[in-house]
Amino acid sequence: MSDDLRTSMKFSFATAPIGICALAATLLPSAGQASVPPLTDQQRQQIVGRFATAITHDDHQGIIGITTADMTWTIPGDSVVAGRSVGRRAVLKLADTFARYSLTISVHELAFGTDTVAVELHDTGNHNGKTLDQDIVNVLTISGDGKVSAVDANLGDVKQFDAYFS
Image (cartoon, rainbow, N blue to C red; front, side):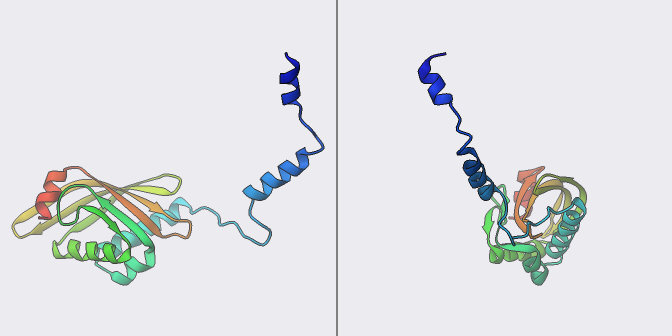
């Protein structure tokens, strides 16, 4: 090993405690700052249930209570509900549209990630002679305070969804 390499690899134990303390101060919560325990799967299941109920019943107060102010909801396609809805006002408008189109949402299965829940749904509806009947997977992101901050819709049949919401 060359002398230059040995010199660059030297470690000073005299300065190590200072560096470790600085790193720990950056990574650990400050004194008096309580860390929030992660939500349990049961808590996240209840949040998903409250959110689905609020959306299905076009319950504006319920939606406001279970979502973050900057919530986003992304739906693929070209229909009146497609695109990225940002903020509670946009999500309330989306719920109003679902209600006008008589959308019924049934939750079937849940799969839990670190801060997400994949929700297998079955959406049905009859509106102006059109019928909707398809499986959907929505991925909900849930913030540490137990509010839905994002929904990413994954549709089984985008064309059918677009035709229904046209």
